[in-house]
Image (cartoon, rainbow, N blue to C red; front, side, top):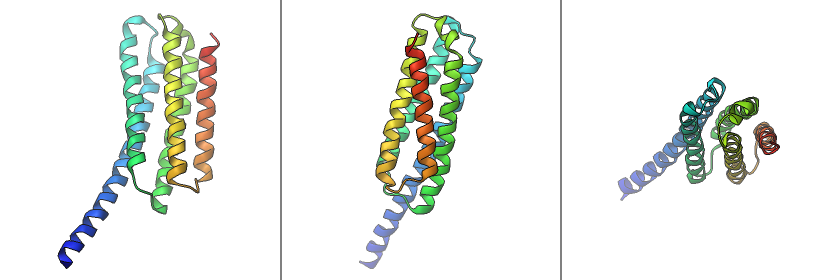
Length: 171
């Protein structure tokens, strides 16, 4: 009987540890996807023939954001040290998101060279913004006393994304 209860306790601990590991891996993946999308946007020549590759990269990034959000929502409450590490990782995501938003706006003219290009870019920015709003809500739910640095970082990112959305909407 004692062995069974010890085994169940160990299984519960491992399950929690694996969930937190999955969370950190998914957040790290977001940073990588945002960076790759940003590099694709900045190096994109703005031609119709090369647009599908860029769109696939963007779709992959948005999919990664959705997956990470799902992982985050499924993760049990976080320990204080996990929260600190998560804050650092999410700050990296935030910085990379702001860079992407800024580079999308800087590439506005390139998007204008392809049919529906600016519309597609506007929808991309809106989708990323929506995921960040969901992420912020999930963070506030999981970590009631949200770290001020993380809160400020997310607010700045959301502001950058909103500026980018309005830039593309004012065509």
